[in-house]
Length: 516
View: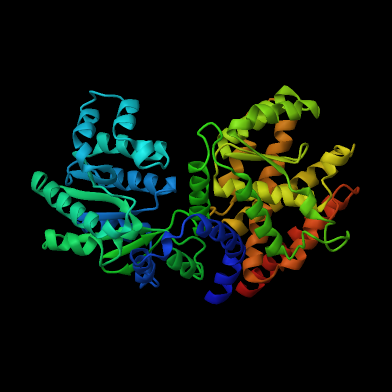
């Protein structure tokens, strides 16, 4: 059994490489993380008492009178988790629930009440609370939370006050919010009060201390989300997916995203704030940072001047990156390269479902929405193509028999899935049950059956290889060699597939012998 240190190191290596890059860029644009108030939050939560499962977590939430939920504003998963937590707590016959929000100023309560009574629509609410001017993060996940609360809660309240930009006044904002929560308790004496507030406000000496002075007899539970130090520590647990940990009796932390995903989303917001709404955020640095992280993980020198154990000048093969605003330009490029309307439609469908796609024909990324799990997979696909010299871009797809094409696609899917797990270990493990539905779609063509079968087999293999990597049976040097293998040679893709599958089968055989 792998040690905690071993698992932590192998699960976290690529993410640490990627984090170093994105955090350097964030520090260059935002130095506020050096402020004492923010340091007090990061220093307060460095370790935890135990891992807890979903049932234990729900039991702690059910026992609380006030639930303080930490929000990482740039991460939509934070707001969506709050919505699911509220919906799960608001059960018929149980205590009513009310929601308090940092996002909305208390001064704008009358506007929120008008929306609650359905007197104004979504767009008027967004404009009158000056969401884009005074908040500036993504509207959609926040509005989904509002709708969930209107359907399941007894009331919604704004808790914040000005000035948001001056950290010297942030303590006054905590005191103001605690006072407002006290007023909510007077209006709703029997309700569970759920509060979504910026995570840095939830250090023990910040909002929680102020709130305990207001509501001395209340059971207050702090629910943190994705705290960096706790995430890295949990990466050493034997469990493949740690859902939550108990930090202390009145503090828990849940994991629904990785630190890399958090900071990449924040970097994208910084980029968006510096550009026009039509331009959208600059996604190229995000994609290039993920590429660089996989390169460092695999020990590939992107400046190597020779082929062989390294690809020649991979730095010159980096892809173009297109955002949603430039989708029409990308479509014209693909048509010039011979892509059919059907292929372009399929590309757009994948972007809608997964947020991004790597297009080997044009050596280009199309990113409609940054989703870390799928971005990691597509980055690994690019790297595999680049290590092989971008065969589709340079020569087109060779005329090969069906078996060669099937095994090539399967290995590509396996390395894509493996890369996504390396960059985003929170991705759920692929199991036969999870992906069997890919083979049960009603196929309209042999191509669809080919794609579904190679994806299913590739994902299963990629998952097994990742597990073998965590256990130390697969090394990064072996993975580097696979990425560099020219699969276009007849029979080579099948050879690589059997080599990887053999690694997995040998482990299972040893395990079976040990149990008998």
